[in-house]
Image (cartoon, rainbow over all chains, first blue to last red; front, side, top):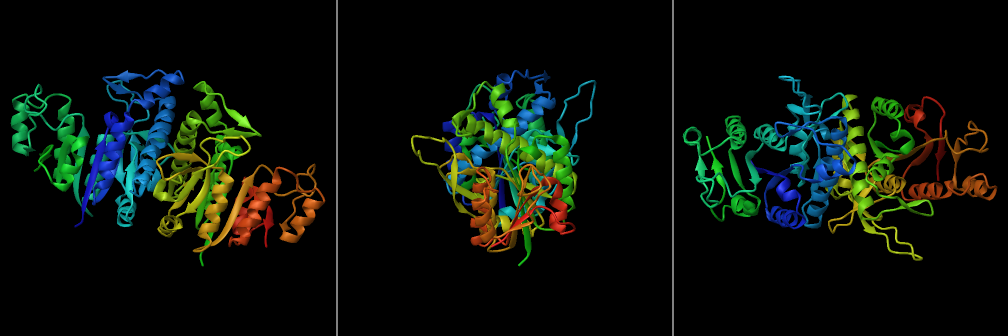
Length: 263
Length: 263
């Protein structure tokens, strides 16, 4: 099977023009099949504020009401997605921007109210249509995916970008040898939270259990890691957690970088 | 060659939820290859106002400054495009939303300052990549195109939706038997501006000259008609000017409707 990298970047890369441009140049230099999944960033919050819409948060999560859904559809699907696509085009990467509604690639269902919390228009992915993505990749295109899905009833839904990346990775692992790369603000999973260079180079299921027991892998990181090991169990070859700056080293395996998760 | 309908709808259809839904249902019922090109509508103006950005107009045309470019990228490429795509998906039409930057389908150059007027980030189409569109159509997808292009240097550009439709029609006429359909607020080109039912069923180049001389075809209509006849000269089989309500009659040729322009 051919290799495919599914690379997720978040707000820390999207929010800063220079950081974004450097990252996209690095991405463009990679001679491999790839999909970029991007998160949201601060722009959505700024535009909400500009329009006088207050962000509602529950447990650190934004509640997606009707107005917020409009904002994220505009900002993620329009502003950020097309900024990334047009910049990639200028770097000779033939990008195509998509949401989950486009070509029906990600069908989701609106998250049910749980424990009295209504997250609003948040979508839990139900079904991935991998075939159109495989066709686009085979014809030399680089899909750039916004964290939006649809419910099949005419509504867009807001979906976590990490989840978008991992569900796509699992679905595409039937046709490709998929590596899922999460870019974040650190160099990898750290042995010592106070030492930014204490990157653990590799973690398997057993070691993961140990690291959780020892309290090395803490609260916020656990869902990301659980998700990653689930993806590996479901067919993804490897998951790499790294800094956006290290994407070239990781894909070209030119230098040791990031944390590799394996079965 | 296979038939392909390129259908353009403007703000009058986009702005009203019920009108849009009826139109998209009609579109979904058509068993033919199709591309939908949509215009902007009032939403962009409303959101600009909400954000305190005053629209600058010269000769009835919006000047696209940096802030306006962000708004149109968000609204046309995000909000409207994904609304249309998600609704079409709910009607079992496998739509895929695109701008000119996606798959590099429409490369444009920023309009030069002319007679002291700087239109800002407005793009004049330079080059159409028809191949990716043909591939999408062949795999059963319906492209939904927002009136946005890119300059190949990393910038999006605002481009008139009529022009997007006609340039796409010309480029695709090499691979398809293309009919270009402009939906607007009237039933067609009228013999008598005061009689909404006085639709001229067919106009050829000769008759067009006559109608202009007689003053039947007036100011605002002339650029649309000129564009249409240019498209016909360049390979488009026919151009139809009609009301959005009549799209089924026209495509299925079940009833006489609209004005057909022919060489």
